[in-house]
Image 1: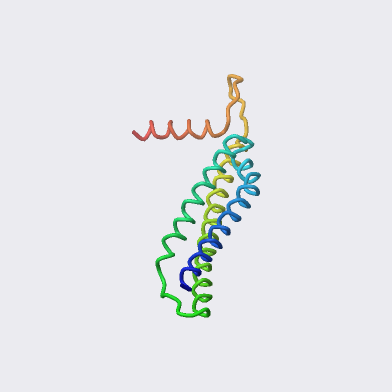
Image 2: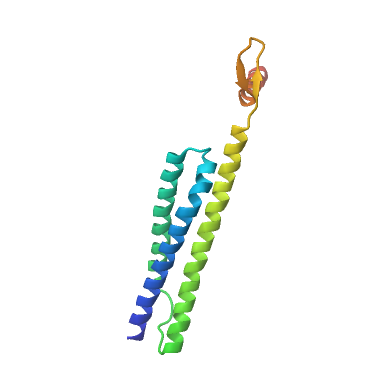
Length: 147
């Protein structure tokens, strides 16, 4: 009977932690996403929502799969150790996912900012273009000459 209570405690605490972390990331990550998407709030909100859904699916799935593993506790001490180990795994999964998201979105933000900072160049005919266009044009010319 002690394992049933341990399982129930594990599920309740794990799901509560997952919901709290997802809510915190959703609320505080919005600003970061809006900045990453160069002020496009609709896109940032949409991505933020999708991230929360994925976060729930992965974490609650990991909690459910981990429920099966581990030796059964015979007494209260073993039940607390079991619960501690399982919750530690949940926290590690949450942390790894959080830092993984940070790495991905930091790279996206840098890429978006680099594209946004492309200087405008006035061409000989008076038209304006970005240096990215000129870089692609140079690359196309070089490719044509090499062929």
